Length: 249
Length: 68
Image (cartoon, rainbow over all chains, first blue to last red; front, side, top):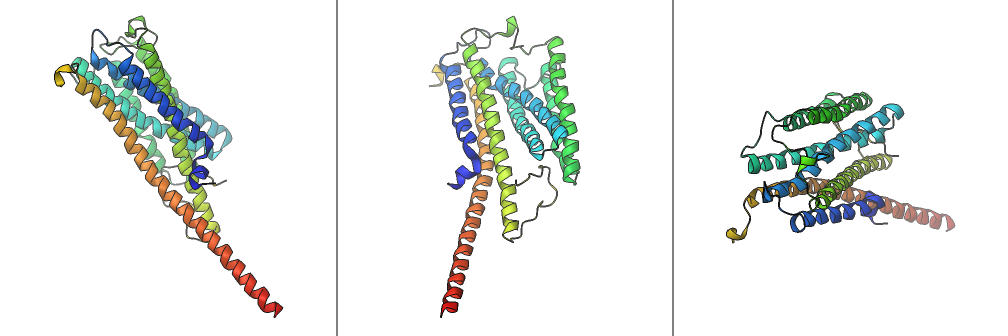
């Protein structure tokens, strides 16, 4: 069996091309099929990347919380790794959502950021909250305690995400549009296929990258275990790390 | 050429470039890590093969000497 196949398995080999095809199809639909919005013009095309990234971010944080609950129930380190990877990926997606949102804000409203807008500020609060996840892990040396405390954080923060989303929906919007589930969201029937395919593509990309990172961490743990078996110098845990300790099976 | 482009094209391009750049940076970092792992794993497998070959040669030598 080739080394690459041994490293990544079959699921990633299916997920990666599928995610690529769906993302490219959604971009093709966004640029060649979806109509140009009357109010905002061409800059509205940013919606097909900004909103899927934002939605995937929030789903990823919640998924990280669910995996953390599983870890607290089972004590299985794989669940801790899933939670860690999901939160790590969500943070990257969150940076993407914030940056694309800022560019869109500049194009539409003439400002990079609007501090009075609940949607923007609440999303920034969620981002800053999760920015403390890695330092929290890094501050705890004992791997078991690190995983437990990180799981509690992920559960509490994961519960905060939907509550925050509901609170923002209930608040009066200033200028940020409410795209999902509202009549005034501005999505015409011609825009919907590109938009929903964009969300599906972002979700597939998220889970592909999660799987990729997990495969990488898992392989590194297996390699260390193999090296130890062959009598080579490979410490079980090289100093302090924010990444969870992965069992080598 | 710019006359044919719709207004705000630069912003749209910038937004999509941010997404592509983020993805590329992440995938590059991960692929560097993965290729390092692949190299280490291949080295380990080669070491294991060499060990097996050496052990077989030693065994052969020992059994040859015992037969003499």
